[in-house]
Amino acid sequence: MNICSVKFKDFGKNYYFIYEDMVLNKNVNVVVDTEKGEQFAKVVSESVDDLKNIDVDKMKKVLRVATKKDYNTYLKNLKDAKEALEYAKGVISDEKLEMRLIEASYTLDRKQLTFNFVADERIDFRQLVKELAAKFKTRIEMHQIGIRDKARDVGGIGMCGRPLCCYSFLTGMETISISMAKNQNLSLNPTKVNGCCGRLLCCLAYEDEVYSDHRKELPKIGTIMKTPDGEGKVVSLDVLNKKYTVLIDGENKEYEI
Image 1 (cartoon, helix red, strand yellow):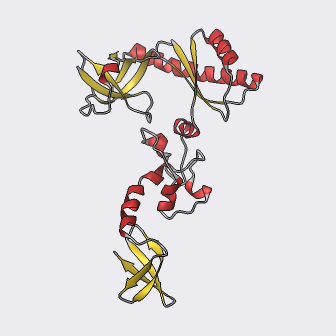
Image 2 (cartoon, rainbow, N blue to C red):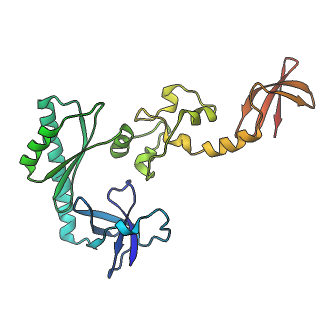
Image 3 (tube, rainbow, N blue to C red):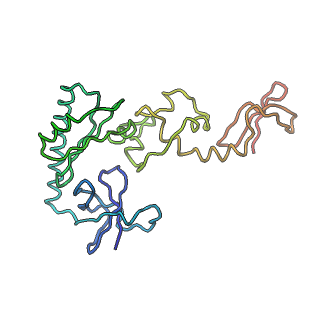
């Protein structure tokens, strides 16, 4: 028994599947069995050694290496899903539902059509599902996603001038807190610490551990310190460089840990 990791989207999450009696290589397209039905995916790694956080007992199988027919079906499903998305948007507009559709996707075997949407409140979409099921003759699933998930699906350019991290390389959403911005002495202006999604920047987590470790070695602002130049009060910190400034007799003096 072998275990591989695959992605259903280029910048999506990794999923794990068992495979037997086949040779898989990185970037090979495969068809896998899921709870929703057959899905088209791309191999990220043909072997997984660390099984610590993986439940092997519940793992489903790679059914086959994708054929040309599978690929053509996948492309047709993408086209049909876009048309389904536009139709569903029209129905939502007619019924005046307070929800915004983001994406639609078919399983490879077309046993399920999933719509991702964002909404500020709970939505009663039972009538919508009935109409969509009658139209597309398949099972309909409405999946509410968060605003950060929307940014990951849609993509965009961040304030750094590069593609959004969640869209380009992040495989999961970390918990980001305002304390991370405070820890890094950043302005708490929303235009400075919020990303395109309107939530706190994912990159606040990248250096937070370093800042936290450095702060443990530095005095807190307001602390009274004895220095070679006399006693004074700590008035500012340069956390990354492990430096602090002390006000002594009306003059600022900088010291390094």
